[in-house]
Amino acid sequence: MKPIDRNVTTKLFAVAALAATLMGATLLLERTAKVSAAAPVGIKNVVLVHGAFADGSGWEAVAKILEKDGYTVSVAQPPETSYADDQKYTKAAIDAMGGPVVLVGHSYGGSIISEAGNDPNVAALVYIAAFALDEGDSCASIEQALPQASKAFKPDSNGNWWIEQGHFAADFAADISPAESHYMAISQVPISTDSFTHKVTSPAWKTKPTWYMVAAADRSINPDQERMMAKRAKAKTVEVNSSHVAYMSHPKEAAKLIEEAATSAHVNE
Image 1 (tube, one colour):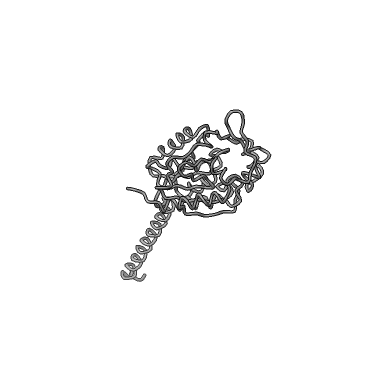
Image 2 (spheres, one colour):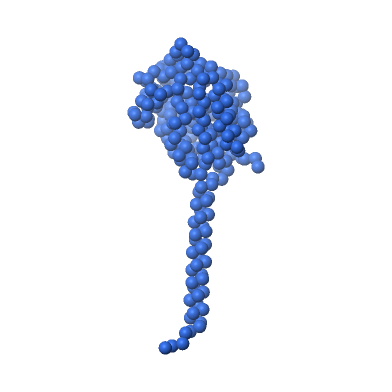
């Protein structure tokens, strides 16, 4: 039996130690990469605000993408019973996050965030086919200045407005599945006349960084009005060939825009 070569043994131990070190470093890098992916840089909280005739459930696909990418999401549920009520519920959602947020509004939700966005915890605004109202503007005044294509908006005797169910899919949600648009039509939340006609007094987009998604095939807000409002707000703007529910038919694009706002906006330490 040959004696053990101590030099060979030492080399083997050195190789084994090096392999263990490299494996540990690889595992550490993998863990770091995973942590980086799960913890977005910048603002980590997002509040999503629905618009008229809808509720927060339409944000589901966007919320799932944001959560997968490491964001904390709250879907506000303003009742559309009055502008004051809608502000109250949206501000409660902002306060509950306990830190800086990106505040996102769709449609009438844009009117809501134009005032609620003055909350000091709101670091950025994102409008999705929404009313980015100026001082003295209301949703009604924007619609009257350059009317939308739809003629299916009707008032009832209780001071609320509805979309006629037979026109809901074509005029509001033409590019989602028929089953989804039908359910939205029969479960729609009417908007109060007060909410629709309330004039904004202090638009937050004048002091907060702003992003805007234009829905080019929108029949509920005239796309040219969307472009005007985005330009007026000096918003970083993208455009999608979408019906009014761009956040539902283009959730990836909507989430991408929100994440751009979250990673770009300045957060005070």
